[in-house]
Length: 108
Image (cartoon, rainbow, N blue to C red; front, top):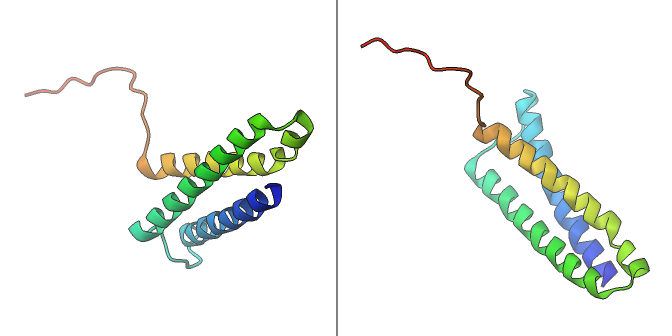
């Protein structure tokens, strides 16, 4: 099972970071494909698949001994890191909340 999860997670992570590098190349002005809707959708699909694999690993590790479950930790940590990067990238492209210190009077 460990080898299967490792292989699948590695494949998904490779695709995830390849697409991210294409995005960053474009934002650096060095070319790249940019953040088209199809590329964003592809990245979202990859993240969803990573989340599914992560969930399967969580369920499996609950049934394993402590020593066996620790062998899954590096893979799960890598997926956690990818999720964190994706959330940060997503918040940059969607914008975020802006703190407003007061109201500005509008004259009519």
